[in-house]
Image (cartoon, rainbow, N blue to C red; front, side, top):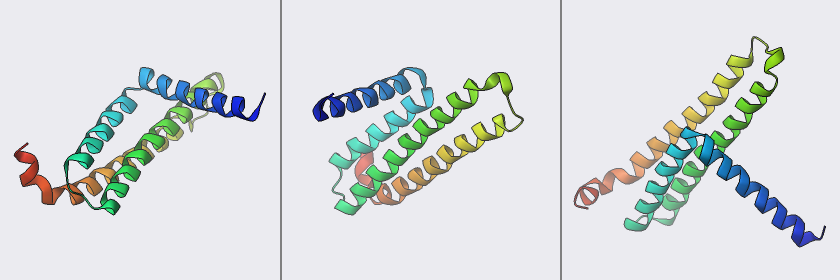
Length: 123
């Protein structure tokens, strides 16, 4: 396999993972919609570069954590025949990480978008 074939295969696998998450994970779909709404607002509002960057980073972090949460859930489910008492706790902790980041992203968005609320209500 050449270097370019290897890179192409990596992108293909990543795309398959995103498609899988989109098809099977409701939370990922909802968070993706939220990220797309933020992206639309980034183009509509006269934000500073650092504000745009922070919003993109926060939205991306939520999506990445949701993907990692899905990995943890599948891994725990995979070893289900030998479920340990911590299996539920592991899944809950991974979900809590997504929740904390999602709340943080909402707070960041509110702080940045709040001054533009009068402008947004006219749209």
